[in-house]
Length: 151
Image (tube, rainbow, N blue to C red; front, side, top):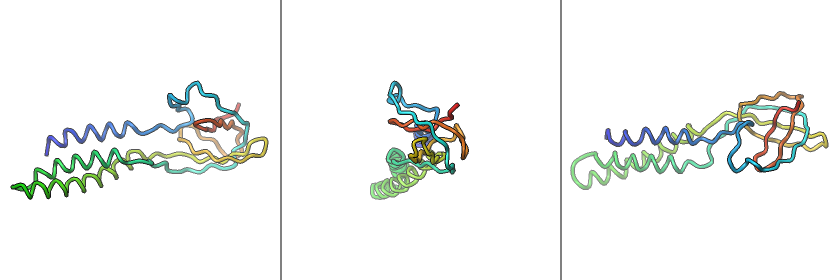
């Protein structure tokens, strides 16, 4: 059981480190050197939102494996080890899924903006830059759209 925890705890920490960064100042490697169209606009509304993971399969898999290994050490005899492994895998998969969901959840803002040409857009991004209703900004529309302050 202790050996299982030695492998599970670092894996959960590694999983948390994999959470994508969603701020207006964060760019992925694929977004670098990519052109985006920029449109001057005005923020119409801002609201806080929760951004959740689309895919918890890594946490489910990791939890299932760890739970199966831990469960297989329960009891004496082949059938109790098998039943323990099955029950442990099911419980571990559920807990791993919940753990990844909570580790990957982030706060963000949904901005509704109106461009100077009259188009209205909604963009959700992280909390690193807070804009307010009525503020002038720039809507960058590309592979990863974002709203940034416009000076």
